[in-house]
Length: 290
Ligand code: PAF
Image (tube, rainbow, N blue to C red; front, top):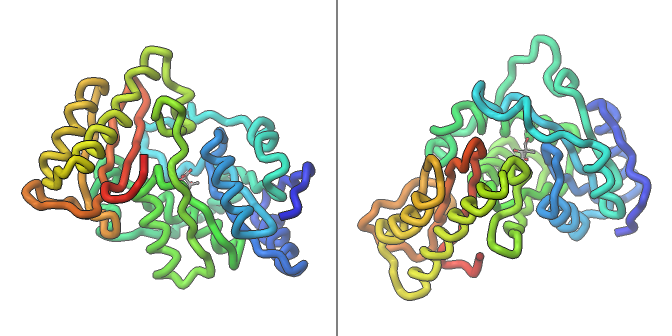
């Protein structure tokens, strides 16, 4: 793609739609990277991936209030638009940074919801979360129009849900997945890592250690879902203050696999709390991840 140092910033849905329409009018394909800001190397990798699929890269930066529960970190979620835009220089052409009132109009009452895909993993622990995600992503897709939209596999369940929404609603979007970007010691990159104290940062390695232990056992021939889950869980229990789940599911349906079943390809997903920070991570057993 032809990169530019000048990133145009728009804040209204109309201007966002017009800028994407204009790009297509010039014969460009639009790539979308939906984010909540606090951009890190993981997001930069998503923007690079978008540039592989499109010649015009748009990044949305919007801390979406409807995907946060009442006791979650909406108020303290890190926000620094200038730093975010700086990190996209040379990669993105357009940043969409709306206010909540621009995305949720007065009288707003429409929500997008999926069924069983949201029933396990984060769904029960974050009631309403995926409805908020689906709603805002659908709004973004409606504004952008035909595009390739890139999502990280760290939010594996979100990715599966977004694919479903795009297919079910006939949205003209190619959903592109990007692998998890990790720190050298294995911690998955996340905007929420910024909350971790130095001590908690060390304890947070229990997630990737749990995944690694199960991957090693899987590579060594262990196939029983229950055993693999227990191995991962022991590592997570050793480091976390609270564990939401350590679960093995079908990667396509996100339905748990019974303990006694042998797995050939399966999602191992973890969510736990380190201090006040909720972290998630995952690997697909049977693939070459991690
Ligand atoms: O993954 C995220 O950052 C958010 O859930 C998303 C997709 C930008 C929707 O707000």
